[in-house]
Image (cartoon, rainbow, N blue to C red; front, side, top):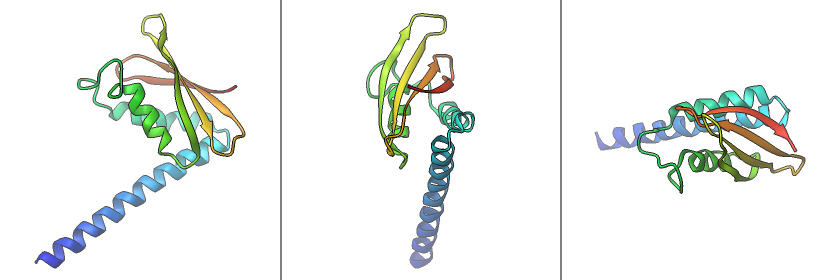
Length: 126
């Protein structure tokens, strides 16, 4: 019985890895090919799944930090920096992240709006 549960755990883990790799591959294909509309779908799906009640507005548990960390895990991205932490004073506020692709071809700006859930508005080349 123990051997069977170990095998089941390994299978579930491999399925989990395959799903994450498939998501990473889809996101990276879209962003490296310049299909920013599709890239925004991946980003907004991530933003929709965040827990907005437990996240703070500032600091490492903020939703912008969680988004930056999620993007940094993508194999096609070298670095992500929050360049505007809800600094555009509007209702709702707007923010911006800088995304550096690992082929060093482009630095992209990701514009966000601070609704609940947050929404990615656009990806723009610098």
